[in-house]
Image (tube, rainbow, N blue to C red; front, side, top):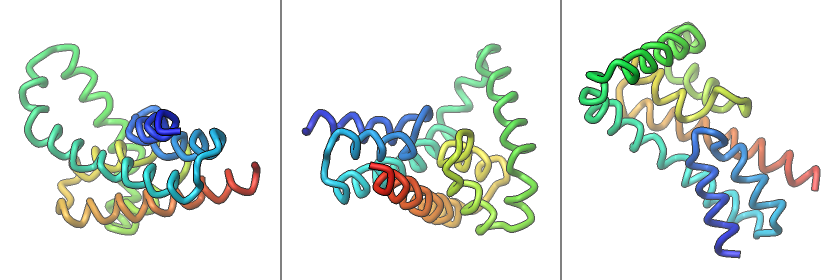
Length: 148
C-alpha cells in the first residue's frame, strides 16, 4: 500500500504524467480515493516551487551548455506559441485554464515555464497553477471514479 502510494506521488511529480497519471494509478491499485486525491494533488503542487527555483537559479548555469541551450530555446518557443496568447489575453485565468486541461502538454510544468517566460508575478502564478491543478485533479479523479 505504501509503495503504491509512493509510486502515485512520484507519477504526480513527474513531467510525464503529473496527477493525470498518479490519481488513476492510485485508484486502480485500490488505495483510499481521498488519500490518493490529496497526496497526488499536493505532490503536483510541489512541482511549481521546484520549477521556479530551477528556472530562476540553476537554469543560468546550464544555459552555457550547447545541447541544453538548444533544448531550452525549443521548449521556450513551444511554451510561448502554445500558451502565451491565451495567458496574456486572460492573465491569471488564462494560466488557470491552461494548467487545468487534463491533456498532455498542459499542466504545472508547462504552466511554470509559461509564467516564467511571461514574467508573471510569482505568487499569482503559484495560485493560478494551484487552482488549475486542483480542477484538473478533480476532473481526473471524478472520471476515474466513475469508470472503475
